[in-house]
Image (tube, rainbow, N blue to C red; front, top):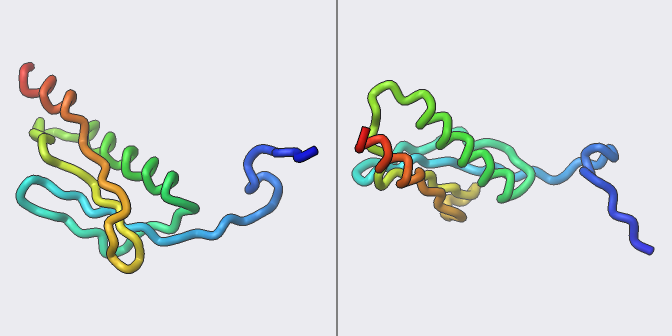
Amino acid sequence: MLSVKGDSRAQGLLLPQHKYYFHVATESTVHTDDSGVMLNDLAAAHRYAVSAIWNYIRFDTEEQDWKGWHVKIADEIGRTLVIVLFPIAWANGRQSE
């Protein structure tokens, strides 16, 4: 019988890492990430992008209109793998306050 145990890192196994780039874009500009981040997989890159988005929103002191903002997750050769949108509901809720 196949036994599946939790996190492979807990078992001393290292997962291969890949470099992902997180380009933050507005409707008119793109702020490119030239450094990138080493992560295990695309799911980890997605979690990283979502965390970055919430940090942008949480520390926003100018009450930025986030409509049209997104994070493009790219691989080492520049291909866009996933686009993660800033939450529109937050932008709309902020505008009505």
